[in-house]
Image (tube, rainbow, N blue to C red):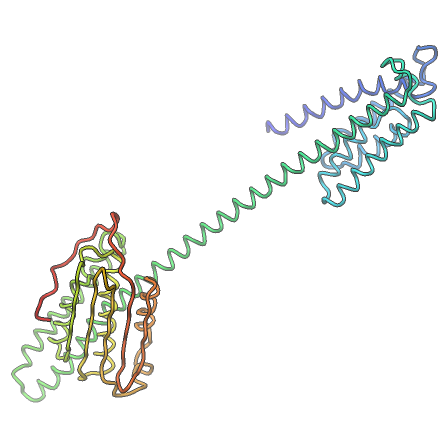
Length: 407
């Protein structure tokens, strides 16, 4: 509202100023004065000029109106102030090329006014008003001043508007970038949670499946180990529920509060013991140094990679021995190698979705590491390495008990 009031007030001020300008400018029009006294033509011209100056109220939306009205006054020989106002707003609404052309038109108009003042009787009244010997001197002064003002003000306003437009564009771009960043963060978080759910529950369910097969054989053959296998299955079921509760708690509280409590490189021994208890043959060499100095993301990633690689081996090569080598230290970085005899070269692609392998690759890339996964000389190998990432002040995580030496 205040902007509209200010615009209206400025338009009224321009109209009043234009009316005053026309009183002086009409002195240069032949026939409007007789022996320094105004004639009826003078008052008629001035009344017409007041009507024409009403077009100043339409200069913003319809600059052609003051251009046409100002052109009439300029042809009559009074002033081209109104015409220049219209040209100013026309240049603001035009492209740079057209604005330059309009500016050239304004220069030509001012130049023609100077020439007319020197060759014709127009301007005789102004030279006496400003005590000048030649009317073209006064006309030249006004031409230079008005044209320079027109071009300078137009350039400044266009530059300011261009700067404002660029700033708005930049703000929109920043807003869009922030929005895309938030969307990417949410997507990465969903993918991370999906990987954790897959790695955790798939591992437990694979062990339960392995134990279920052993239980079936034991019961069918009357083996006394059936009770022990059933007890182990119940223990693994409880652990699966604990893992699920931990993942759900992470969804509620956020990863900073829960990540690393279970998924820690110090808990790799628990993975190996669970696999062995389920009947898998696991040969493991785990060398972990400086786990308390590892960043939370590194700590959990080491655990998840070993977990998924072990799950993959147990699921696709049941009964085959699994070899695990894991080394992690601040000086040497991290190297994980999990292998098992490859009984069926197509087993991985046929029986699994491949989400675990994809998850291993994504975890390695997240830490700027490398992952080689595939068949080689009769074995299926998962070989992952990435640099050590030290713990920072923001990594406030609780670690489980240290890994047992019997692994």
